[in-house]
Length: 512
Ligand code: AHR
Image 1: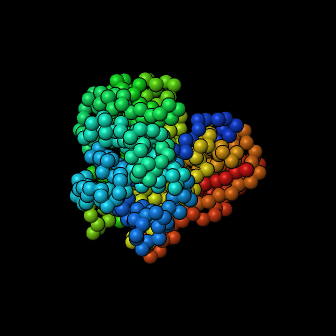
Image 2: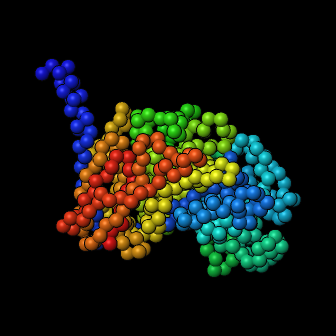
Image 3: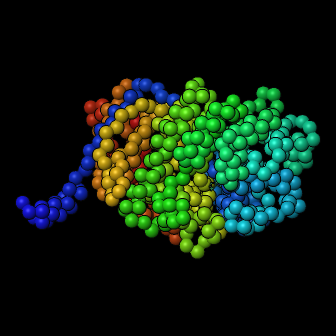
């Protein structure tokens, strides 16, 4: 047969082939117990950057936008519904220039500074320590303060921790005079941010010594526990991890890892909404690198800390695209599509797989910045597809990871070749089995058959997040276009779970 005739025949067959579901098999060892999936992997990051704080979270008590003591009511409610477990603040790069003293006391007396990292705009300091810690309390979230190690002496950080946590002394009196009598709970303190970059451009060897030094002076009252988080590596910088663990590992209880999903390159990252299928596939392939990065860094940590005392905290992750046209390049404001929802679900699956070491993660960022949960425009708010994934996976918080094996078909587009199906499973605190599934193939359904060793559920229900196109997204005019819907293509047949996963979808199943 000539190649031309073959091509014509193939072209004729393609539409029919596209209708054929692919198939995958999954085996979940539901009777076994893996590590706990810390709720803190659903953590968030809120930096003084663009409208991340001002306008997005904080509008002030005198705003026309409905608020509670200055916090937007709509954003508060949306975040409460998400059960945000922990919030990292005030940066990011902002943290290593921040002077906490400028953000306490009467708001009209606080100095106005320049946010040199993010757009060179004025920083009114009206959202400071009290505003952040009250915000966390209002949400029922834990606080993770990222301290200034790059440009402030150790005493400044030590006094900040004392101001927040001490029941007595001058700093506690000052705190009381500023409106807060009782100490706050401060479970996490960050020892600088990206010390290899905006946090001071340090070499790993120097950063390890600096980390030891700053850690020494962080003291909390007897009976109070604080977890110190070191500034960890940038993506694949294993030298950084090696040196920090070897030379400073006894000085911290957690170490960060920052990895952003960049589709093209740092100079031209590509649009958040205008992309073709090859760029879509590339984004997903890039995000899946997280699995290998965690495995490599964990192997180094295992060498120095086989007991897994030190948490790996992926305290910055998410997609980073070019800013929306017409917006301030320093504000990192980007839209969020179904592609970002898949990115979020894939990363949550990876964190679940590595739950024995990854004990915290903080998506960048909470509101209006990078892969945000929420976008705001004056008095309007929308929930992004990423928000919906976090909401769908809520049952994973503090659940027990279950071991599994998956055989997936491949999805290819130009240079990218990745598994189409991704799966994770947990035994939730509610005692139920929850199975998170992602089909990244934008064209094909996948028929998945799952064996459930050690469990005999009687019923399955589910929810799905999908949309007509890979770039579907919510807008202020149509804020609910992409949102979860009930999922009915899952059934239990002779003890096995049978699911038909639609193209480009995230599915969460609940078995009982
Ligand atoms: O999240 C935006 C920035 O990315 C953070 O400020 C910094 O830590 C990272 O480089």
